[in-house]
Each structure stands twice: as structure tokens, then as C-alpha cells.
Length: 71
Image (cartoon, rainbow, N blue to C red; front, side, top):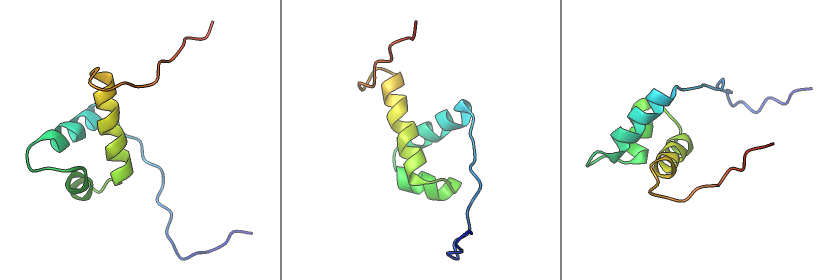
């Protein structure tokens, strides 16, 4: 039996890499923050923070996990 907590569950959304890159660039512009971009675009702060962190890893400006290819 499902428990009704009164909270509406939002369906999971997916975003293209291009959109994520545009959001990261928006955050990097002077005067913008993760919070302001998240609110403006109706995104979760957690998602935007992860995209920004991943952009730093992808550009080599921050260490990330070294993935070992499976044989």
C-alpha cells in the first residue's frame, strides 16, 4: 500500500549534455550562482552543482575518479 505524504512527486527529467554545458556557463558568468541559476531555470541545486563539478573534472581543473576499463 502506498503512503500518501501529501507531497507531489515530480517525474525524473533528463537533460542533454548541451543543456548542461549552457547551465554551467551561466553559473560561471559574473553575478550568477548555482542557487540563482537553479531558481531561474527551475532546476535542483544538487543537479546544477554536480554539473558544475563534472565540468571542472572534464576540463582537467579538478581531479575525478579514474575509471579503469573493463576487459
